[in-house]
Amino acid sequence: MRAVDVREVSFTYDDGTEALAGIHFRVEEGEFVAVLGSNGSGKTTLIQLLVGLLKTNAGRIEIGGREIGSLAAEELYQRVGLVFQNPNDQLFAATVEEDCAFGPRNLNLPEAEVQKRVTESLAAVAALPLRGRAIHHLSFGEQKRVSLAGVLAMRPAVLILDEPTAGLDPAGEAQMMQLLKKLNREEKMTVILATHSVDMLPLFANRIYVLDRGRVLQEGPSEEIFCHQEMIVRAKLRLPYVSRLMYEMKRHDGVPIDGLPLTIGEARAQLLELIPKEMILPGIEESGS
Amino acid sequence: MFDLFSDIFTYRDNALTRIDPRVKLLIALAALVAVVSAHRPILPFGFFILCLGTVAALRVPAKLVALRLAAPFSTVAVLVVIHTFVTGTTPLFALTIGGWTLTAKAEGFWQGLFLGNRVLGALSIVLLLGITTPAHRIFQALRGFRISEEWVEVAILMYRYIFVLLDRVGDLAAAQRLRLGYRAPRRGLASFSVLAGATIVHSFEQARRTHDAMRLRGYRGTMPFGPFPALKRRERGILLLGLAGILAAYAILEWGVAG
Image (cartoon, rainbow over all chains, first blue to last red; front, side, top):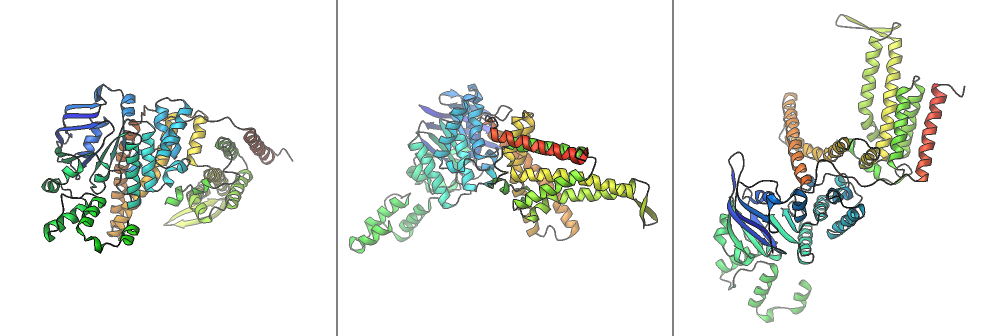
């Protein structure tokens, strides 16, 4: 079943800025798809179209097999949820609990079900201890997780996130990505992530769409995307740092590396193959890993 | 500036923070009515001293209390000055400024003090309520009293975004200061007007984005609230005791029942 199907969609803002020009974008149920692009590439416009905040000028968008315009708001927002880049845009209630309960209460669910959803969604993002806290007393990382919980409480089939790791420290970034991976792999939730941060994507995304000036430059799994160096540069992006290092070693130092490793694990495996066995001290390798 | 709106004391555990907000709100309302309708200065002054004493007992820093009472004190000062020079007949003293002679009068002075007393009494009650009850609990209580949903919703959003806007305005002001925006009074005035304009623009943008986020979670014009449990016996007892105390104080100090 196709979770999201975008066909020939174009969008131009009132001031004449063409944000999207006839793009195709498809996501299957249970997939983890990243939309990669530099600032102004059209990522945010695309996700705003996917949740119905903007209306297309041309083309067709289907969510779960139904044309987006034919879905009532209540139905649409249980199919697709958006986590904003800045949690302050999204956390409008005074406390964590009130904010998470906002969506379920709008669905007119019984209070017991509302409380159940609040508990489950907070537990899913490891934020249960924050339940009674005031929003303005939360750290930025906590606000990010709570804003995700607020959307999860709607139980959307498709979760869309706009730059979910922006502004987070490395530990917060890793925690957020692990959370999304868990939701995708264990809860079978379809995840669409708009970002320009490339380093973690090969670890999580099944497929990547690269956007540039409102057009899809390339689409495919990460190993396919990152082997197109020129396209990456054209999209004003870069390779993951570990891939860049390996690429430079191959190009300038003639190190015989097959393909282009995208993760530290892949790079480590390749380097270990090149280093003579007698030079590797097993104990050090064990403790260092 | 953040201190002015800080609510960290409301999250402390003490006898007053544990009381149901509806009880506190009703007692505060009764106390406000008593202060505003008082005809003698002793009752408002008594509330002022009682509330300040309680705030001190809760170990709220004096600096914060002074900061929060700075505006009411200014109002009182203006009230006293205006009444002293405008109302009454018995001269106290005269001031000559640029050929104009202003005569202070005793009746006006005492009337100004009395009105100022009411202002301080009323605001100290609100101060105590604000120091012992988180804003969201007050909003919940208001909803419990069937206050208009729209008003409560606007109050919640205003309260929530005060902190966001304060952060943003603080950053903008710091950026202006780092580029010598407040170096001279005239330049400072220009910077301040830009800051004020930017704050308005930011609040509009914030409102638009927040409205989008609310729509995406099913908002249909009213913010839903959870149920409010019935008052417990202990809470009802506190409410009755509080109201009886205020009535007794009013009867003794205003109607002279005891005398």
